[in-house]
Image 1: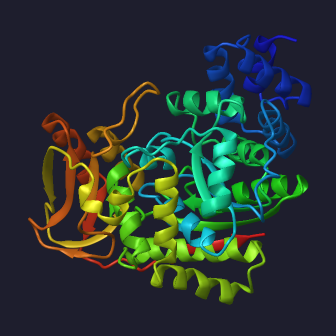
Image 2 (image 1 turned 180 degrees about the horizontal axis):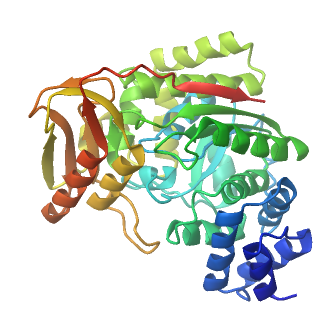
Length: 433
């Protein structure tokens, strides 16, 4: 079997066999398949797609490329949440502590930034001292003691995905349904949690631009998980508008803390409560409405914030920064972006907002880039808001003033202002079980 033939078959729209897919994954992990060959196959998959059988085979090959974790030492039911990626999506930092505050174990492995979207691990590493790389025994100890730990994907866990994840980020092959599904579910099945809630984003700031595509992706992933014996459900949530007001790592952590205090933006709070309620529901903590009230209560009585602070401290991070977010390092420079005309903000290209943040240094153009944790954007006006000419739309933050012009240009190009107020769109668009 040759990699050349596998690439050619997919280029020519043929269905790959389970054996061909396993050959590719094993070869890429052990170095026999090169980056340029893997890039070529990913691009062929991007253009020609995969059948359900191919996607399932790819998912299981990714899962089996490394260790399948045994967390039998963790006492209690383990539940995880995974988002398909979005702009301003800091939900894991809020949802996980809410759920863990009720005794449900969160042993979470998360990724870094991918394309225009931010990564949970990058956000957490903006907290001084926070360690996202723990030995398994230490990870288990922290989960048992605090109910929660969040670490980066280990080299032993789905190593094929770790390599493909970085490669897709810089070869314009991120937003491919089979590659997204196999990446997410390959990791999740290797992490071996009992219950999984998927947050499948839809809209201009997500990899799936339509509700139909998002539902199709959700169904593939739910079916793969259920066939592997996991309790699964997925929510389709809106990403036609950035979630919350903060875009960028330290800025998003500060907004997550604000939300855990009950002072966060309404849209972010709504999505987080919905996700947490569904996680508690899968964990059999009560009926749906009861779990919804539990999620709200964990914010109101600060038990979720307390759980988050305990996790940060247990993983070597500065608890003081959680209790006093003003301690986070501020960017050296800031720049005001103002409305060029009067009217309602009718819509935004959320991906463009993510790119504007990336141009400030908050994301990666190539996988070797070092992120500026203090860089990012704070939005002062969002879709539906009325602005006068010269009103503040957003404030940009960066360590280099030269980055502002390109970022501001991209943000304004991505903002549409007109005379008519847009209709309000729900944040939770569908539920797939």
